[in-house]
Length: 227
Image (cartoon, rainbow, N blue to C red; front, side, top):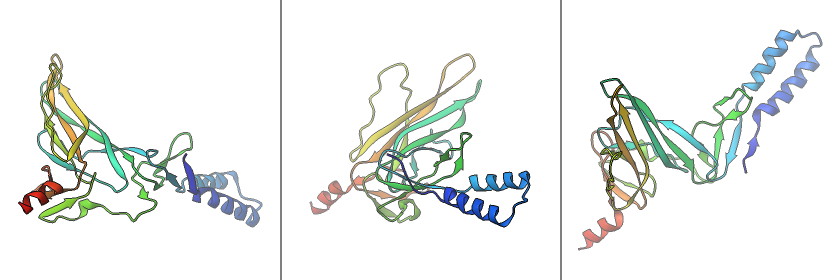
């Protein structure tokens, strides 16, 4: 159940409204409206239990033609991906997004207020019982990723007209699939991707675009080193 832990806006509204009323008995309606608008614009914080905070995060750049590493945030995991394209004759990328859901209790700060006056929490929150950290900040030549920290997408063949065997990778699971199409008079395949996330700790090698290749499960790496 969602629970507000600090309603700063409401507290500030009571304080300012009371102070304003006590200081002046002749304020005009225009000033009052401006004050109310300023109060409504204040931020709020909200605590979400696991699975309650679900957000869609835009993907930067066209990811259909190569392997890409995607953003990991502590306390969240990816649960889906979408892509789109357009064009009568050419295959133009129109953007995409990854859907994330929180895996532990997080505290979020509101990003805006919708038309109904509800606070919206469209950014990642901070794990409530842990310090915030982001494994994407460092760029060691060889890096170890904990469970769920290495998220990559790989190109996918056209799967619309026949069965397609999906590649299995040791230490990873598929959490999403997305494809695109284009053409005014014909249905042309525009490319697609599979979204993988690691299920065990893995060791990855840095390339010019990040850690875009599948890592080696640490159990396998340690076994080979002992042999």
